[in-house]
Image 1: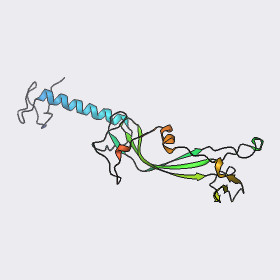
Image 2 (image 1 turned 60 degrees about the vertical axis):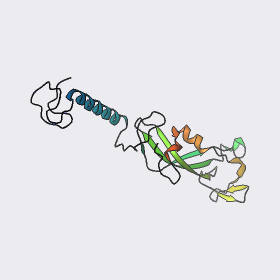
Image 3 (image 1 turned 90 degrees about the vertical axis):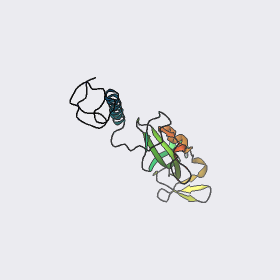
Image 4 (image 1 turned 45 degrees about the horizontal axis):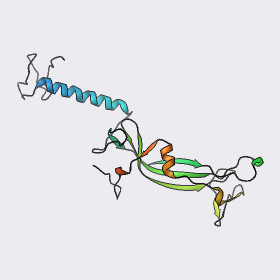
Length: 186
């Protein structure tokens, strides 16, 4: 390690090389220089992990890797849940699909793990013909005003939203939220 030209603590110019203590503040120059270099290399490593600006939430770490995390703006993920086939197989592949709009509070860590703390889901049953949302026609049937297709409600399927998010690479971290929407700081 080379002798620094300036004190790592108070930045005074060091005229003589090889000093053990700073003449101004009395700091151990070798130890403070090593601490400063370690801190700068740690900052460089952290900046290389995530692209763009990163604003960590103090006191909270990633449950997967232990790195700092930041809160991201609310996000909506869309999923298609395939239902049963409608009609005869020779008529074409028409399924009674359901679209799920999952609104979630995402977080990310410096290593890029995708986390979420809360979520809310809205379901829309789709027309097998035009794949647009259809309307309830009583309690047992849904109908499409555009295609005039009637679909029994029992053909539509729903999947657990938590499983859909985990399948997309998210990790559930409910400890980041408290009642009232405030963050939980350990």
